[in-house]
Length: 439
Image (cartoon, rainbow, N blue to C red; front, side):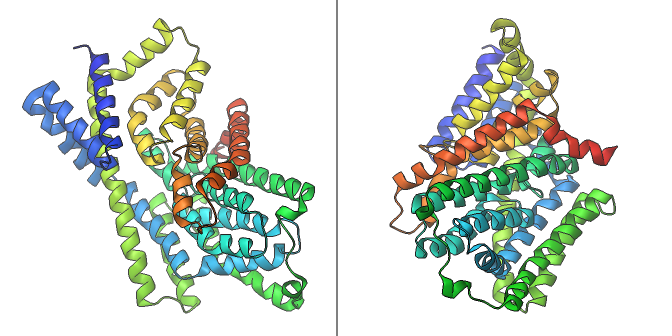
């Protein structure tokens, strides 16, 4: 059997296992271990073992549980709810103001958490009921929450970019800086769309009732204090890291400690909050570790097969594709996979193939990390099986149907594709900030 056929058999077996409902790490790790045994005999058992040893000695992996802990601590202690109340009062007098405030909230949640699931949970439980109660269009606000929560995997400290950096062996600091401007650009584009849409159709986003807006200026200014603690946490965490005062792991520890101190300062650091935060952190961290372990084993088998060279030869020599055509083809494959898989699964499945290929084609792997992340955002929200669509359906009230959820994402998906084209056409948007801090 040719190496190309072996690689194809591995991929098809893994996809079939996932479609039958197997856990991602189980499908990837099982295929990797069995393929290693069949290809290299008893010596093949060393490949998964070596991958496990490499994982356990991977010091930057400590950042994952610390960042996840920070996000859940801020969420469980109610600091995120305080933020939304602040946006609620200050943005309420505008048409679509609560939707704009929700996007701003999502950006801040992303800067505190690094996961899209946390933003989705907070948006669906806090923002969605408030906007529906005040007569906002259910289709528009559903799309706002899904689009806003997707920023969590792009705005630093993105856990997905940390994972990409580990698998691609690229500096996480550069990836964070590269994701900052595209993330803010995307958030700005969402806000502009909401403003224009609500200007043309005011009934979609009515202003806040006058009795809710009639609040003394002193109270309004006092509400701004809700944004001070999250801002300080973000500044301490990323500011020290970018300035070179702390390492990546130390920066994540600063963020986790600051989140606990913030909860203590607000007198909300109860045993229940701490227990819930630790349980959720443990669950998410273990999931990531198993997936990374499986990905390393799978990548080792692919390296041994020489599959990367085979794919490169297929695209460039047999099919005669240009580097840009290959890049676009890779992005389209992410969108197709995103109908069935989450971002982590997509990355670990194709990273052993795509990242070496991107580098060999002459593209910047930092820039490609941003492209991958934006494409994953699109894939998350692409019908019929986008990951975010079913998360939204699980959290939304009964009056929001699956058809409403499908309709809600159309304008935001188009905005994301437009942003992806811009970043592809002008790589400096992603690369300027890392180069500025380096130079």
